[in-house]
Length: 134
Image (tube, rainbow, N blue to C red; front, side):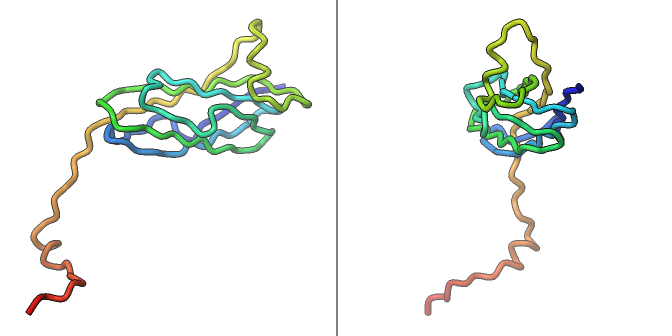
């Protein structure tokens, strides 16, 4: 039996002012996998879901939400273990301390993103929908 969880995103640059993005987790192995999300900076990140089960050849979306905070370089680790048939609690396989989980790492760079001011041509092309006062 082979176990492999693959993320479609290995690095993401986001705004330190807050941003969200999705990561697709795909089970490319031959057995169900249970996963649990960990992060190097839990103060500014939330995940939906935090844990789950991915069936063989299935994909689950992981939503990553970063709230406003300082510039940082963080690591998200999606740890995973085989989830035998009949196990419906995704955290159950992690209770066995003798088995070390594998992990998929996603690096996140929270940077300052500058907002570009519109050019004079862009401003000239704007149309106002408010009637002018007479």
